Length: 116
Length: 114
Image (cartoon, rainbow over all chains, first blue to last red; front, top):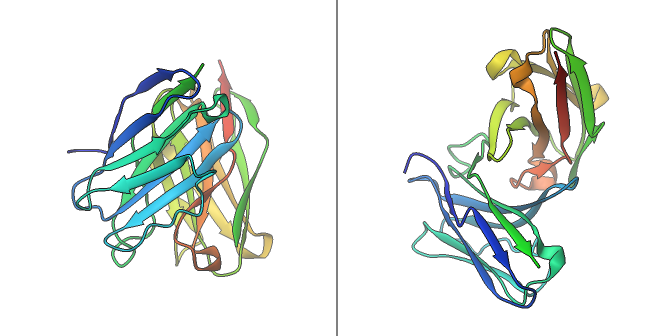
């Protein structure tokens, strides 16, 4: 596609339910990032995928959070047993690998998650 | 390790006035520095970036920023604000401590008054 696509754009769920957020990166981009944006907190790094390498999961806030990337393309972020503090906008970004890239990330419009 | 500090969560200017958004970074290696803009209900888009070479970089919509190593700063400026510049602006750093994962500041909301 022309840009990074995220779905759903909005998700309202009840506390304790599981949610899945999807990201479809720009074709040819080997790097994929998930960030969380909370009001007044800026962007918090969650997880990074680069090609076939093991993902960098150092930003995941708890073991309720997990992500996978299938076939080096689409990624799914899963939050289990959601809590109210998980409410935020989840942003996905993609980029070329670092051999050909000077660092620009291309962002999707985000998935706004509200946990009641 | 790397970090970014954006001074001021909100900056208010009049249309036509100078825009100055401040960013200071911390990095153990020569950094890559970025400014992104986020309009309401949209994702972030790149305004400009510094990697190597000329320390004054120009971006889209008349914005520019200067990398000052001695001050560890990368402030964003625009000579004359326009109403359409109202948005959230994020400074980011990468390569600090060997990490290519960008670290973002908390953002500065630019408010433009008519």
